[in-house]
Length: 324
Ligand SMILES: [Fe+2]
Ligand SMILES: [Fe+2]
Image: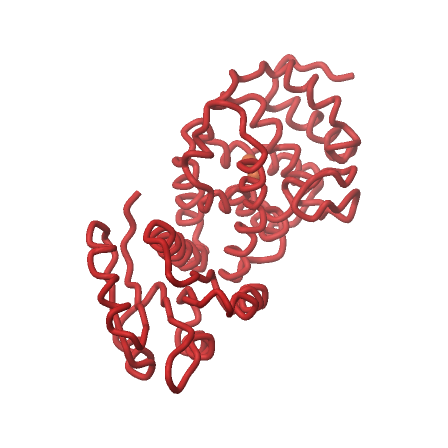
């Protein structure tokens, strides 16, 4: 999927800027270059800039301080720092404080630079769209992410449908239900950052690949937070892989420490995953899926939520299902 957007590079050394020529020529990105930080700030008044990549060592101002200024004039712009190896502590610190999207160590590897810039542009568009908050856009985003993995087509809508039935049974208010709907649609939106070759993989994942996949709740929650999405939406995205016994990820929290809205979506998510075909296995029958989920009752799932799921979804969506 080719993406467009404007990317601004700043470096006081002209030969560094020149070496960028050609690097992005085959893409839809518009590349701006500036050697002078003041000139760079002025560009923000004239252009919509998705991503800024700044050198750290420049006369008069450090890149990290320049990026702080950019944050004030253009908060949605993703900030990437080019840094010498010696500055890594500063860079990691800035990432942890939310001041930076990523950093790139100089001298960079072309592949890595192109990939990082594309990730940032994609992230920029996603946050902008999430901010609009209208339903068609949010569902569109969820569906676009599903396209990355053809086996998950329809997943977010199915998960939302099951979660809504549970929410109805719990008599949740209209506003909370709306947040649960959006959270269910977007629960896997952090997958946008997972490389296609991992999502498409036909054979079982190796440990390192699984570790990358495990980042998707955090990545997704970061996107939702940046877009100012409400609490339930963020909670569902962040905690949908937590387990009731504390063995889940990313936080490893347990029991009712896991927000109810996330415990609900976990059940819906697993049910839909089991009853859909995956790259590495056929889909299970409703009966087989429920049998498998029975073994997860009380350890992976909140038993009460799971029983409620069987009660409401069993009646409406799973005809012929007899429980207990
Ligand atoms: Fe997920
Ligand atoms: Fe999912």
